[in-house]
Amino acid sequence: MSKHYEAHAQQVVDGFLGLLDEQAKSCISESDLGELAMLVEAAISTAALEQLERAADDVEALSKSLRKYAEYYDKS
Image (cartoon, rainbow, N blue to C red; front, side, top):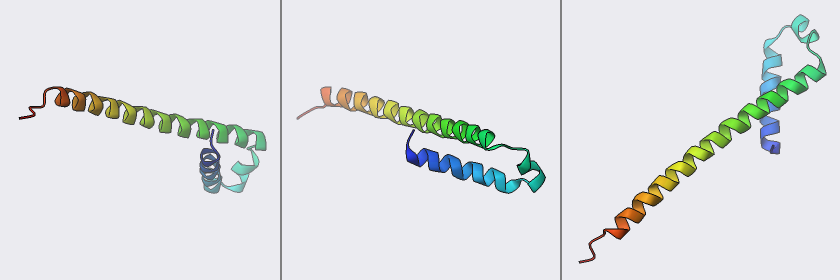
């Protein structure tokens, strides 16, 4: 995973911690927070890769359309 995703995941975890009162925070271990950060990072990565795949599919469809247009283009 990229450092960018790691940093963003940590920001999400920090934001989550900011919503909790001190009693709730005291019930969460550093290990739990590390696992939460990894889950958030995986979710971010998955979402980014899904969007990249959709964009690649769009480019592929455009390429096919352009190739078809070029094959039947009337040059006169």
